[in-house]
Each structure stands twice: as C-alpha cells, then as structure tokens.
Amino acid sequence: MTKKGGIDQVAFDPKLGLIDTFEGGAKGFDVYDANTMKPATFVSTGVATAHTGDVDTAARLVFAYHGENDTLGIFKPVR
Image (cartoon, one colour):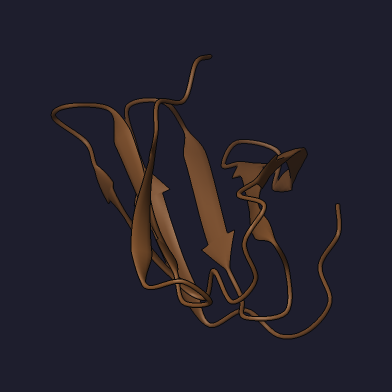
C-alpha cells in the first residue's frame, strides 16, 4: 500500500466485499477486503490528489476524482 496520509473518503461495495479508500497524497487509492480488513491492492491512477471517490454497486464501477487535472477515472474491480 502506498498510503501517504489520512483517508479523505471511503466507499464500500457490499457485493464484492471491497472497501476503497481515497486520500489526497497518493496517486491512486487503496482497496481493502471487507471480510478481513486487510489490504487487497493499490490502484494507481497516475494522478495526484485522488482524494474523492465513490462506488456504483449496480454497475460494479469505482469512480476516482483526479484533482491534479480535474478528470474522473473509472475503474472496474474484479474479484
């Protein structure tokens, strides 16, 4: 995991059992297994200040705001 500071926002996908944590200092976001509360992976966005995100549980998509260049990244988790 590449966590650099405190978590700004958390999004939870109950169907996949994944917790996504967003914070401004990382170029991406961390994903945790909700059953074990252990790190699952780090998703690199390549862009700093990915401090805001959300999950669309129906479409199984994760949205991460890329504050450094004012864009929105869309990611499809696989379990």
